[in-house]
Image (cartoon, rainbow over all chains, first blue to last red; front, side):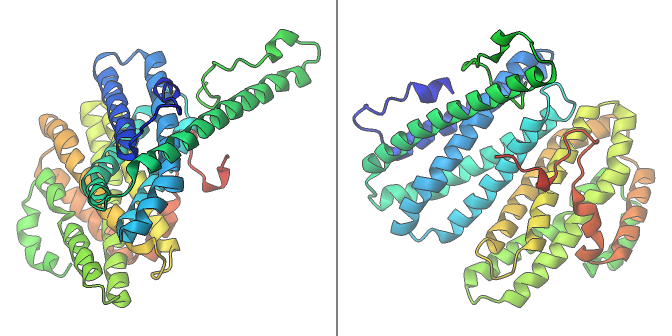
Length: 201
Length: 189
């Protein structure tokens, strides 16, 4: 998530396609790194987990932005219903895999398998989107700067929302053991905003 | 599908990997035909449903044959569980898409799209299988006529069940073991 945080809303001109492209490149790099880790440094569970969390978070954020803002905007100006419907199906498929991954531990025997499948589906979708949708959007002279501004604003909101969600979940997790064993160390209750989202542990 | 009887003779002598390499052929043809039907835009729903039903049953059979016969053989011969796990995960995604198709009305706006994405997913899955799994299987000496016979036998058994409805129970996509099972009920916000 580091990259998205450094994406300041205040920045004057953000082209929507460039913004989406950057996400794509970032994702593909994460997939590449994961593959490298499997092939060369398979015991490095910590790094694998970091890469997987970062990729899943970014994918979720990215697909939500596309569905909420990008697709509706370009769907109206171009006749893209078919391609959009396919994108929706691909997003849903990726979403299911992300849900599965979030329930698994990074050292689970099928974690790698799931993540690789996710990366293949995402890569396929990215390729199609860049080849079929982006050129049409450029051709149609869509105001991609205005669209880019909308996207970055919404992204900021989503990132903040994600962090609040993580913190709340973290607090809930920390509260439970205290209920079970009253009088446990109260210091454990303090939420740590910087910890990775629960579910991956 | 009718062609298979005429080809039986040659297939009997075929080795396992050549058999598996071509068994998605008719499904891939169907995906292409579906694209043509959609392009024509005459909304030939009957034809679409026919293609979808036949293709899904066909794909399910091929996945099942792999899970029942081929993967266990690969696992035993190579000792490489990860290789097989990956294939099974890929199969699950394909099955999820088929499951979703069976739940959609043919007129649903996502019906065509889901089938098209299914086609792309199967194509990618088949390609990955040939690039990664097959070379390993070949190196482990699995490319023989004996395994081919087992595959054909199982395929015939599965086909005898006929129809996607019969195969739906196996669409429960239960995953590899009881941990991390994907249950649609377990949705978390």
